Image 1 (cartoon, rainbow, N blue to C red):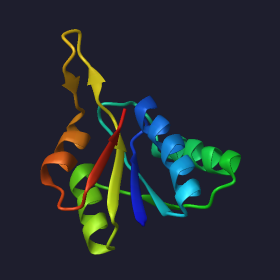
Image 2 (image 1 turned 45 degrees about the vertical axis):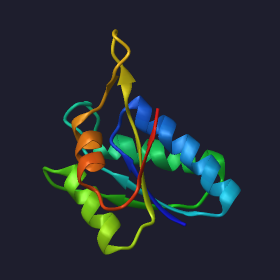
Image 3 (image 1 turned 180 degrees about the vertical axis):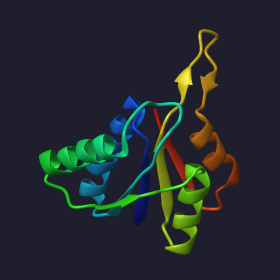
Image 4 (image 1 turned 45 degrees about the horizontal axis):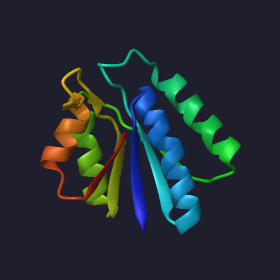
Length: 123
């Protein structure tokens, strides 16, 4: 299976990276990591890429790293998944509110609502 993981600099996205690398290793899946800027998280793309590379090195796992540029990372993730034939998009996100409802960030919500490619949300 070809998996596209979106990482936008949140702690949830780094958690999703670790979980997805572990699963890809166990199942033999191919993984591509798409790094994008996220206005909800104040993180530099170079810092995000550095942390992704560090996690991959610590896990001794090879994955392709892509940088998405532009104002609509959700749209770019969907486009990349569809044009390159990825089987699944994986994103980290979804925090619980004080009332117990799941709150989604704008990128996660956009991808969930608009993608024709199956989406897995890791919380």
